[in-house]
Length: 189
Length: 189
Image 1 (tube, one colour):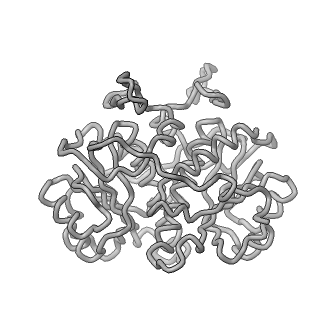
Image 2: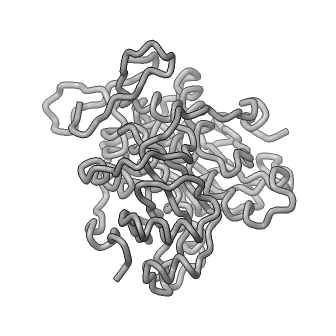
């Protein structure tokens, strides 16, 4: 088991801690966490999350992305004030941007580049969950104030903001639509 | 270790197989695979990938998505003919769609719903890689022919097509931009 791996409380409540590192278990047990303690995120933990972030697929390997990590508590609060989608006060906020300069004359890239940013964010969230943190992707934010607070140049478009912190409560799995409702075989008919 | 978990050849070439289930290892070693053998994907393996797919984050838990799994070899070839981004002949193609009916009067949802589809695709690819399969997200495809071949109604917008199969060669890790080039702290300045 690698450095920085944390133990999760057993959700069955029997007090025996368990590790969450199996990729299927990590994906199955992750859910949006919007309530955080004041505990900061350790540097080593953040680094592992950032490595995961950058390991995501990238269309034509353009890596047309840019990320700002906000950890200063005062700045976290200022950014959060312009993100109605962030409920609790997180230890950090990742602002995930599409970088237009990496796809100057490619309208298709403008579309797919944002999808790559989303896939990177999913890696980041999975890594965080495996390390005992909670978070969620947030699209409800005011672009221009966030741009101003973070000194983002015009060629960087914020796509998602991602609050992350130590969970203040147990995650509740979300209700999901039936598999047969959203997956079909061969054709949609 | 769960059913269906496969062993990967050791990329160091010393012949000792190793399992890839640690989430960090899965993310680190995944890369785009565009060349596939003719071996089909087992039902149990596909089911685990689909469970991972549907465990992705979903804005406002709308789950505004719909997926078609194409496995019939003749239909795989027909769909592939309209997807210049698919290079080899995969065992299956997942067509990942945004479902407009789940977000009827919400323009923000139209934008973020596609990001959720991308995050689901990333879960699907990570699960596939953990199970010994290769694939990649493809945005280069002709929407209307794909729509027609799969009988997709107008309210389903295909966002990504995802070829998956048993890798025909060893994956080569892609070159990546330096971490310091794409990640900054507190502000972009």
